[in-house]
Length: 230
Image 1 (cartoon, rainbow, N blue to C red):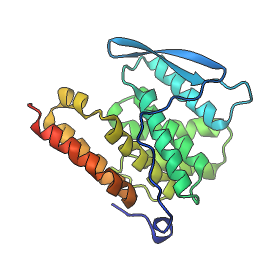
Image 2: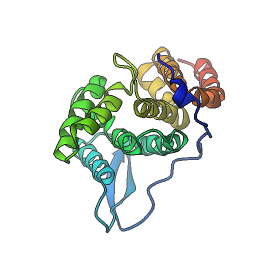
Image 3: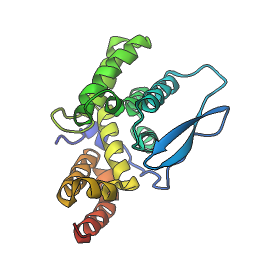
């Protein structure tokens, strides 16, 4: 796992807000009916009266595909939390390209609605390239976002840019805050979920200060998961 370079590590890290995720501010809005498990939940997303930014268009593209897919997993809440953390990290690392990061935030899981979820990073990269090109982005920006999306799992492709590292850290940190581990344990078993926890803890190490801040939370999750019955 590659650590951040000296230029990035020399930046001041100020921590980020661990309070429950905040939904997008209420402006003129549209309500999407999203089914999460057995409960129907209304999630409100901003529909601005002003011309939409390209990030807002990308967010709506994600929500459209999610709604059409009928997926029951709470992806919108997850991605909102990733965005919240990523915004704070881009402020901590001002040399990063905020637009690249936020576009990648809303595209990194979109492949889960377009095929095999086990290779959603690959499918997400393909969709990111197609969608951003259609939206009018130049080749350089498309490549930057595509790398963030493809490498966010820190699996066969590792993040090499600060933008990609911010996305990977924000994604894994969101898991530690939101705590999907209990539900995952019921579905996949204790050994599988402990492996997921370890990967999340490994990946937040891309920004050492974040790993230091979240180590107590990681240890609490590990202790809880280990003592829960199979």
